[in-house]
Length: 533
Image (cartoon, rainbow, N blue to C red; front, side, top):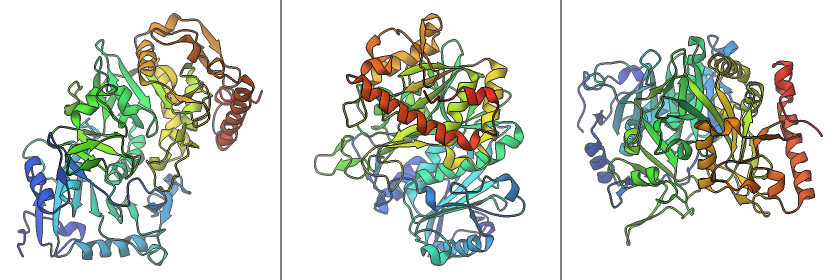
């Protein structure tokens, strides 16, 4: 076997020895060659790399753990989301991962997470799959030429999708494991081929580190207009963060993960990881164009090897089909940073058809909805979800990645909004006129785009508003290029009494979900929430 000299493969510090070959910081064409040679992927027309992750097509939140050590114990919001792990269990799994890598070919990518050099961290990804090295190369920021080779990482990910844990006998929940050791600055991932776990583990780490440096980490996309006006879009998967921020009239800062510092907004990533189920050139031309680019990775998109066609409407593998591509493939991008946001948009996909397609929020309402993090998930992003939509509340629009108490992030957001005078909006990209599957219709993307543009351009500032009596939302009475009949959700329902019952039910869900925060927020924030009427 071919062994890498020690000075070219300093992986012993990560517990890795006797590796068959180390492929370090390979170029894009070289990673393609290895992925094809190893039968990991195929190439679609236009040059995108198509991969199938098998049975693992989404995140596994129940298999994510943080190692409980004295140094971090009092700073983590332990519970069902941030599950504690004993150091002994981590060390045992570390030895198993190291044994799994022995005599194997591995691929190393040295990257940076964080476009602002004042807050960025160096990340090393060691993986057994060439296409996952390409994923890392796309998703993180590539260091300047010649900078990566000698620099030691701040955090390292050992990525072993082919190693399956033994569940409870290993002290874990299943064969899948995502184990984060903040003090050792080491992440172990195994038992899953879903590449999203790589980027999300680093997001969780930044969410832990940055508040201590007065930076608000956010699960949001961001773009900037011709006037230099920055907008951020909070939202869970499937609510439209990537789609709405990829607007040809504005420059894209990033599509998923950002920090808000004393200087402004900066992207954590160097690429985009867009959902592409039902993607079309007509509705989302910027994203669609990336799917025929050399360097894009298409994850679980159905590819017919006979006709050589991609079928973005085929969900037979998963609803959670993805495209991973460098940020500059969008074609109209910023430099990874922007000024303090003038507009803060909170996205939801309301499956009940109750929330308005757009409404203005007061700063107190913004904090309420930020802590609530409401949307409806439709099968795909997480393993185990059925085909029917499910209402969910995910604190800070990213609870699985927020290690600290939710109010830490909420208070930072409230302070930033107040300090910089940002205007806040709630945008429902979900259903109108009824529930999903029961008379409701998904809000047309063209209408949503028109409403968001009107909000960001200041057009809605002088429009008459009507206050919703249950949620207190300020709903515009009209918007250019949008039928007035859909702006007021009750008016869009044929059966008004059915709407009233459904709205009362959703309102009660908001109230119940917010109870744990009632003693942690001010009276003005409590009063800004849902009302039992």
